[in-house]
Amino acid sequence: MNTNATPAPEPQLDPRTALASINQAVAATRASTEPNTAVIYFVWAAAYLAGYGLLHGAAFGWLPLAYGTALLIGAAILFAAVAYTAVLGIRSGSGIRGDSKFAGMAYGLSWMGGFAAVAVFSIAFSKLMVNGDQLVTGWLINAVAILVVGIMYMAGSAVFQDRPMFILGVCFTVLNIAGLIAGASAFISIFAIGGPVLFTAAGITMLVLRRRDNTAAVK
Image (cartoon, rainbow, N blue to C red; front, side):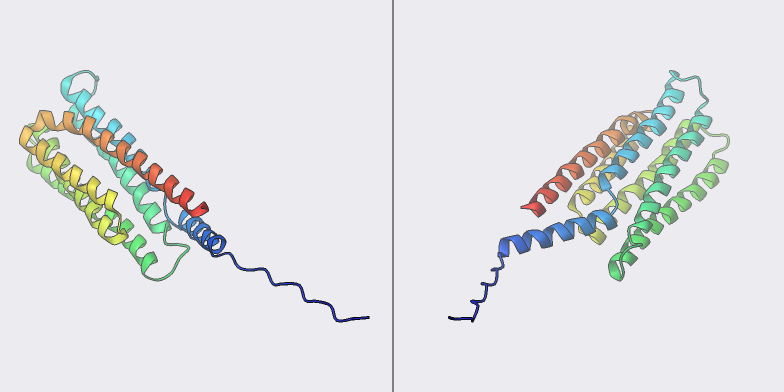
């Protein structure tokens, strides 16, 4: 009687299964460490719609609100969106180490620093234009703010290798130039409509790309 047991064959590793597991792990790690860019874009779309909507209503009389008051409220809404973006950027690096952590933290702080400078400029320029046309004052202050937004998105695309972010930054830069050429009254209308449209389109694009990446990771 043969007492030597035949060893069970070792299971063969399926490369496709292994690759799918790796992709799933990478996708899960990215989801847990990276902020949801689509949500950020939708927050900004709402901020632009509310902020520039108030300015438009005050400037053209369909809201019972002084333009100066609308400018202050709109600025507060946009600064809240900046703070939200900055906090998410800083928190995105909390679970990781090295260059990626520094990049997220530095980008978040850059948003805060850029708009702190815009706030100081706005106060100084408002004092300088105290007897000037409030519509013109708001026009130029907002143009500087949008300049910072465009630069930050284009710089962020280089940091995070994100092409849609670069396209968004270019679109806002072009929109800003168009608003400066069109004049103070048209500028508000352009950004009350164009800002929310651009951010909503960017948010939908990021949702589609995120879903595509998650689907590819499962396969």
